[in-house]
Length: 99
Length: 499
Image (cartoon, rainbow over all chains, first blue to last red; front, top):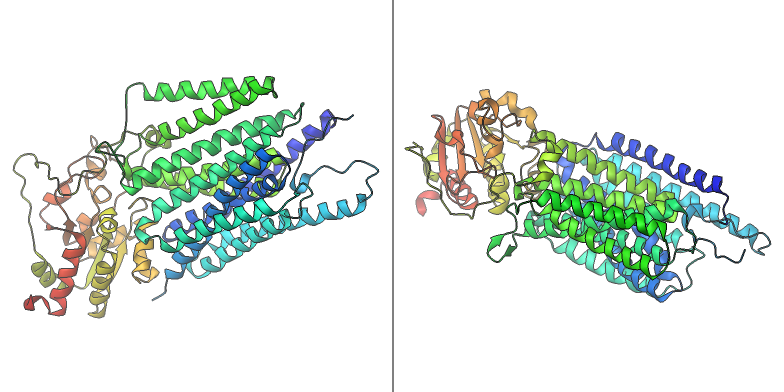
């Protein structure tokens, strides 16, 4: 192992702390969304889950052919999710009008 | 020490080996990438926060998309990227597909759309994790290995589960059987449990022998079983329970991205995936509460008979007296009222009647009638489905009310139910033997007159008779919602006589 045992554990624990805190932030922010906006919230959050594009980009840009192929597939899927999600959410939100 | 370093991406990328000529600039690059990822995460949080009001929601969505753009651009600076050709090709193809379907989809097809996009996000996470697995060093970190397997599992379940949900919502049929009805078979839950155990067993084996052809074979096995599991978990769930499924899958797609973040030690992915995971969990909870059912009960599936084919009229048991009205009579009643509450359901979406309903509401409002909408949280096939359709038809959002409108029904002249059934069944309040007993409903029966626009006396998804239809203050307007409501509008404008 290149990394000392403790540093791996620390790295994992740091990641875990970030995960737990982010879940709390998510609960806090989203529980205030009113029912009329539940569909745009779902599709907007859906677009955000396309963040996995970040992993796909590095994968597709790296050397091994298998990584390139899988990375390409992942980028296409993630980009469809991101672009489709944001555009359709925007389309819906544009429709909400006041009296 | 010739062993290759585990390739890390993103903010936790490994410090370069001492002696690297570009040591300093690498540090600067890392700091830059980390900070930009932090800004992106903050933009996602701000964006989601602004989703809590219709006035700010649109700019919230833009804020969040800006965060995504930043995250993508800064990732392109990653040292591990040697070529941009494949990246450019993927980005262009994905963007074209996403933009095309987003701009073309009908508002009534929004649940399918969200299901489809969910699935593609899940697949992306699973593929990234699997590719990472094939690149793992000989002696990988245990947490990375476990995260890889979890990301593959969650990602594949999200993908195939979402595709089944898509098929159910799109109304696909397999050998004449509607996919939207619950598909159950004996020992189904035991099979799922068995498959889950096989995944755990394979995962443990892979963890013990992390490299070599055998490990890759087992990982492929996990991919295939996870895919099967996704299908099996969604097929027993009936069409009307889809709001829960959509929320749950939404949550899974976030959790898949979050797990991929653990794989890549990328905190931007961890934070962002968690936000989406939390959002899906909250919505799932709200949907379950609105049906007074536990998540386990919904996920176990088999609830009700699913959607009956439109027009198939089952014999109403015994002599049931049902009062009917046609559009002309309904228009006459509506001419003399001062308050109306419209309660739409999935039937309005199926009949694409939202514009006719909005016309009727606008016309009544012009005559000084107090018109409002009462919308049940699980009306339709996804959370907020009815609100989107009515917004599309230019109904101002101030008129759209939740269950809080229940206190208003007893002072209301007419409750107009359009294609809703179980969510207005009074049996939920008093009949302890009813499958929907205890479910919060819209108390339309308390209105002076209840008009129910429906194709037939079909029971709803719960497969139960609705006593509302035989009540003394209820009248039925049989027919297609769009036609019936359109005819009422014509009568009210005085064109009806010319027909």
